[in-house]
Length: 628
Image (cartoon, rainbow, N blue to C red):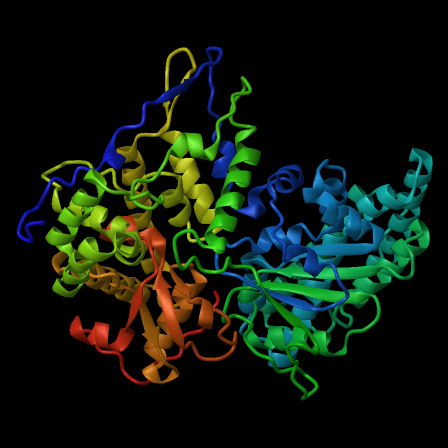
């Protein structure tokens, strides 16, 4: 019989230290963690983007004649996806060995030609800083600016098309000359284009056209004059200059008439509702060779309206593609296994550039096992007795009584229904309960914990791995000691979680509120887990309804966009333009910060949770503009 009041000896064998391994190498600098510091696709070269990209199974669906809108939180990989659709990236990928690049070879065979167009904050800033414009003038300026940018984005695709469709250096050079001359005559007919013989000179010509027009607008604005007299070739219907350029390329290069040209627009969340209405009109009316792939944040496809009075419809005019990983809901799920495989492959590809000496180390070797999450076999004997002692110490009365009964009657059922579900929670409660002074915790460590705390977000994964790599111990001879100590891993996870929570305060449009709500939620869940006896279920999520008011809606939308809340599987497809409803999980990133078990469990109504903390949420409030 086990004494209910006894704390028992709960120092499980799982806590035994793993003997470190050492990789020997030649003296000199070993780690070049730059490969992991570059966590934003916009910072990467084309070679690095192709080398690091691990295509998910949904990616190949984008190579079709359908219009797609890609929805994904910050860091989910949207930019990488749309960049990897570009023809120059696809061509380079097709030359890499292995089945992982079969999608690229298939895309080339189908003559799928992507053009990557970033609509970054610099572009949008120039669209928004002209309050003197009428709505009509603002729309025309947007069309002009996007026409210029789309033609600039076409230039690397011209080179890759020449390389793919034409053989022989002489024939390629002749095709480039003819294309540059033809386009220069249209883009700048008033200029001497005889020297425009290469794509580099064509790019310079285009930058001249753009700069001169922007300077003209600035001068006329300063003098208070109207700008109607300023016009050029790009004052045309949206993407008409691009279409002419495509026809020019096809004629001189020999691109088949059956080819599909994909206009891949990135970061559309920065555009306004009016800009989205213009793009929706193209989704509704465009036909022929041109299709659109538009990337934006969740809840940031601002409208379904068009300029022709008939809205676009999902499933008819376009399809949504969800870039975010499906939430990990339970230990050992197929989703978790898939992302763990992804994380290992990403680490393998990037770590190949870690060392000048060619040292190889796997993600599993660097981080080691997890005492918190890895499955453990609980058989007869000391393990079972120790876990029963932990149940006696931390579980609520109902759970303990049930466990005690099953301990006597059916140990197999005890292991399946109680110990399997509570093992990690009991170990965590023990670790938290035994913290003394400046003692460094080591419970949040191991490959499965680090990967889970990335929340299926590739950029967050890169930042975690980069921070871990920087803490690896390197000897004077260049040797690397691994795995990284559990205490160091725990410290890194807590630090990054704290930094992420702190930075959200400066995020527009409602960062201060989002920070306050997240902090309140985390503290409430921590208090519930730390100070009360636990059962097989405890609060790790929140639930909301459409009637909870705009404060709650704005908070949920911004937190989801920043990957700080994750929609549950059953409501992960809330309408992009509709209200948020259902269950949302607190990001696993915050588990080490608040001392929570990184596992999905039951939810609590958010308004009730906030009210208990003394925070009021009016039914109606100022409507923030989300997605920027």
